[in-house]
Amino acid sequence: MKLKLDTLLALVLIAYFILHYGLIPRVTPYWLFAIIFAGLIIFGFLDTLKIKKSVYEKFKNVTLWSLIGITIIGAFSSEIILRHESLPTFRVHDIVIQQEYAIKYLISGKNPYANTYFGTPLEQWFYSGSEKNPALYHFVMEPFYLLFALPFYVASGRTLGFFDGRIPLIFLLFSILFFIQKLNLDGEEKRAFMVLLAFNPLTLPYALEGRSDLFMFAFLFAALYFLNKNKLYVSSGLLALAFAVKQSAWPFFPLWIAYLWFKYKDMEKVFRYNIIFRPELGGGFTAIVPSLRGCVSYGKNLTEAKAMISDAIGGYLRSLKKHSFIIEHIFSL
Figure 1 (spheres, rainbow, N blue to C red):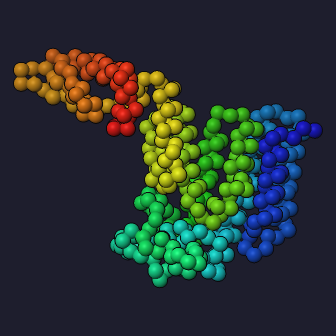
Figure 2 (figure 1 turned 180 degrees about the vertical axis):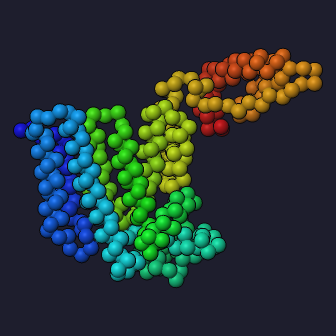
Figure 3 (figure 1 turned 120 degrees about the horizontal axis):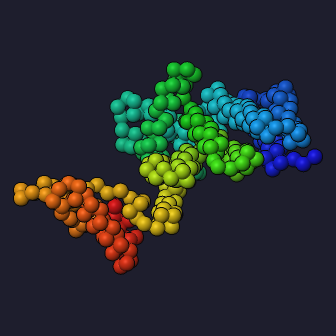
């Protein structure tokens, strides 16, 4: 009997997770442990069966998604319910508390960045024995972090009667797992990747607290996924959203530019340029590229002007590359 890598990772990481984190408020019942361990046994037993690959892959995927759903949703739900049955500061990061009150400010017409958070539960959250929490004076995250949570705030308020800042994180975590399923990897590699990401003991505790790292990583991962699919504009937009969530994503920008450069070797294929075609009184069109200073051409008609300006753009970029100005040009776009 030879167990696959995804099975070994699931046995170790999921077992560790359920033994250290509650899946139901207060005490996880034995019957739930039994269901999860039965799922792990089935997940491993499938490796020993000689069945069609398509059937094998289907049952492995269904079993893993079931295990992830029960454990991850259970753990997040347990933490959320315990907090809302006890104290607003119970086992939660301060950004969750601030986000919740920032949304309330926004809905009531107040500026979350101009108003302080004194008098809210954030003031009771332990930051330091000698310093005041900077988050008490203004909202510390970028606007997108706040705006993204608004639909979840409305939906959970109507269905659950309350909002917890970790609810969007659950959605984003499962979005990442969905994108992993779409990667061009074999089934075992995909499932191993899913288990490593979902049950990573170094990052999952932070996610359960509601820290913003998972929020940023979801958009960063989606940006890299679409970059791999050559969807450059979608990738760029998602990368910008990752930048708008947390500064720790910013170092990826030069890596993203370098990837494009080495893959395409020609900046004409990476960037598209807006062109202004200006009709002239004496006939013809002058073509101007605003983002390329001094890049101007002329054609007797629109078709000729398009051809001429295309040649001009190519010459302009070749000149930048020849004289080592290409990096300066990229960052001036």
